[in-house]
Amino acid sequence: MNEKIVSVKTAKLGGLNGRDCIYIDTVTQDDMDNLVFQGEINGFLAEKIKTDRFIPYKLTFKRVIAYFSCELDTYENIDNSAHLDYSCFNIVKNSKWLESLPVRKDFDKSIYKHYQVFTYDFVYNIIAVDFDFKI
Image: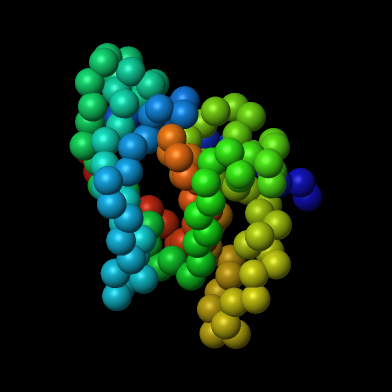
């Protein structure tokens, strides 16, 4: 099966689109296997907001087993189809990376998902069980 990039749409924000949509102030990894992003969303580029204001957020990926970050322009040189629809928060269905990831034998790989977060400067690919998005 081919990979398919699907935009994540949240109840309050809808889809997030455009290079200037997601700003990150901090990224932290805690001792509970969480990866936490905090910053602001450009409301003008959020599907359900469309007003010129910045919205503080906290995005927590749960039970993270792997992540990769790369400068945006370099990442687009690696995978020029990765950001075709300009969605900034995605799930990668049928992920080649997840499929090839050699997880521990006691892990159930089927519960993990491959997420992408595109910011103005960096791209994050994250393998996690779930996420929590608070604004």
